[in-house]
Length: 333
Image (tube, rainbow, N blue to C red; front, side, top):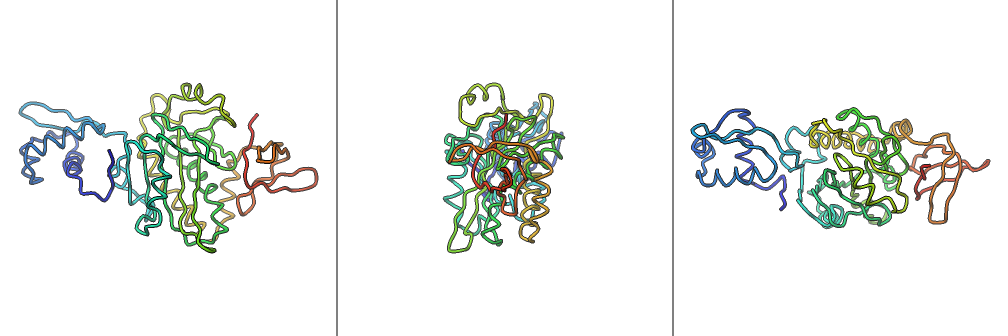
């Protein structure tokens, strides 16, 4: 099952009418008359709406009313009241897909997909950095964003950095949770991973054709179950769920806030304000001024973390020398 924000989906008309008449009972005949569709079509749409996670109550002689919205990140739930100018205005939603990154790569060259977001309820072959497998557990949020940037190629390395800042800010503003960032692309809470970031890119000559940001968030997952599955995988340092047991914050609220923060940070990059992005990242970074160890393709390297430079590379002080690390994983003890 898949939906987009630009399809003329009949059920959305029925759903929108319910949402604008919150708590009112609406008869099948009323819906049929107003929306100019048959009562059979109304009933079919209501049946489908229920399968999408919306709770609709029906009472004889009164009709139907919407009791609860869905938690699914359906296109119309994201685009409604979205405050961005471009990011997230075009949405592709999949109940199941191999990888949102893979689908994004198939459509990324199309100019109309600039700012599009691809969301999957379940990924069967999710990808992480360096072609690692990314597990997409139930209750997680997995998506990719396509951008056609105007900034210079050299600035593209800051996309994971500004994305991490946007995630951290969004988690704080919607869930009230303080997070840290672990170079190059992880968001952590109390030393455990709550989100990861991946960037794929296509370059032509010295110009960026497109960038695809992939994000996986442990929004409301069974952390213990996932830890059991991943405990023996390389570079594993624990996972944590963001939404607490009695927290009812809708995932769409969090996602829309992230899209807004991401767009604001992209704007800063467009305007050449790299230092602001780096400052925000540094405020949240793990291990600044402390001895850390990095796993690289050439083995482990230890030194004192000096933060990141204008290209997002990690600066490591080893003796009197400052070494720049472009690819690797910070090892948490």
